[in-house]
Image (cartoon, rainbow, N blue to C red; front, top):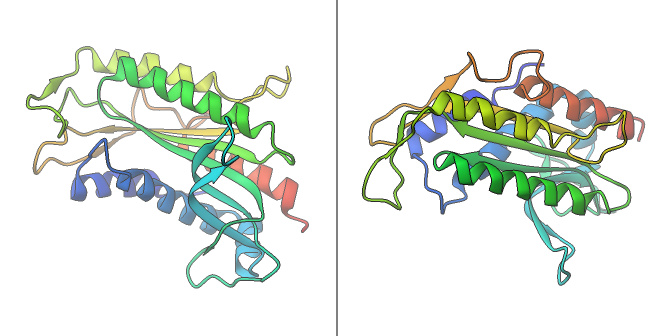
Length: 241
């Protein structure tokens, strides 16, 4: 199941750079992921092509309640009016959420950011697991392993000390968020982690890190396995509709 989102996001960052107060990188991640799902999951593609599946970005659930949450990407049942997509999946509010995915990034200040991202994803999973029927819940994370990073919010360039060890120690935090079906522990159904090397300096290139400590090909957090897990669960739940 070849997915191209990891390569595409490095090209996007190289071309547009990263700004922590912009949603552009998250929107790009969702766009690439949506295309990968459409191209690699036959059951999902079939439903999108016949107009019974739609997607929406920055979708808010539980409005006007303490459990209000905005999800970066949702896919689900189309309304009674069938839609036909001109490219991949038609964009509209779903009447029922079948897939819910958050796109996250850790580019600098890893020590603080990793705990914030872990907390956010745990909260999202907790809220969505209370919904009925429970959607397939996923997250896609981009994590930076550059030795330095220039944030547009700071005057100086941040030096990342022992960055390889820090990234290696961060990955298990997100592995721990995955649902444990053997014990019944709730959590994310699937998560993908992509490691990049990007300084965010003018003219710098964002590079994909495939070697250690990036998830290996047999790791559940590897992007291809993340994609496959979502497709497998979607096909099992909705492939016969």
